[in-house]
Picture 1 (tube, rainbow, N blue to C red):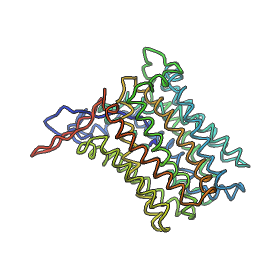
Picture 2: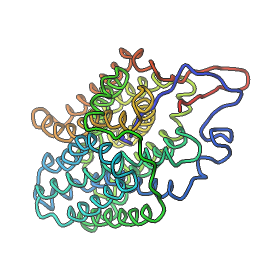
Picture 3: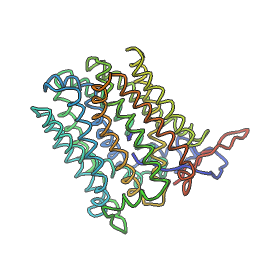
Picture 4: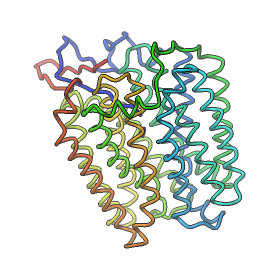
Length: 431
């Protein structure tokens, strides 16, 4: 998610092992059950991450209700995503600066506190301008929390970085699935309630992390504000970020614009996006690693982006049933893409992971801000189908970058390759 929404690492000309290194296999990394046998601090951070990612999809089912309640247009309401992700993108440049000075625990708590305050204020809004502004503050808090959460989970999780990334992607998928459902249930009573509900859940997360998470070791070198920009000087990381930029435009066209196309009640729209989120979670955690093991990360990413392009094209140009089916199905491709991009960005360069992640996210979140703003405008200039045609093109551009920049994306990183034998295939994740 990570949309995501997340941070990518890489996979590579692999060495081989006598047994499959599936993260869910008993032999992976730290031994039997390593994925589920985690310290309480890891579960507290992962739980709060679920709620943080819920905040992204929370407003999806209630966008039409918000528009009605605040006498706003679809374009104005879509700015809830734009302000949120624009601030998130810019804030990526300061997250490492902050966490390397005050520590991961305090950064997490500061981010959570901001989300609690601004989520609660969002529920009190009396105009769309107020709500858009409060969502911007929410985006700042979310940036501080989400960018630090993966680093904390990687540092504290049992089972190595592959297990930590899967835990993080699980939190992302669960949050993206539950967000629309919570938004639908609470939003059916009032569009304000989902915001108050999120503030309450994040307050619980704040208490859990304050009680269970000890301060993490700080890096030997403090991160400067320009380090993430310098990290993008690496061709592989810059290529991953550029490809993810175009992919994220497609992703957030689906997330922010589709509710207006479906034109359903909050319950029905919430059910559609819940199914979407379930597929996202299943494919990011269970399916993507197995596809990578068989075909290699870059082939999986390129193929998944091409399929996503076809899916959103049918979503825009098909009938209402096709739009519902393709909305749900897009979750599968988005789940695969999120996992591969996260691994790719974290491992393709020699920059420290928090720095590489910040640079990568700085680039890709601008597309998440642009898509909700541009899609309604494109509709106004043309018709309701064209925004999805544009989204299909951007997904193909992302796939094209993967193909053209393949050498840069595999240099200094490990690419998952297949070694077929009579007994099994082998997956080696870079750590």
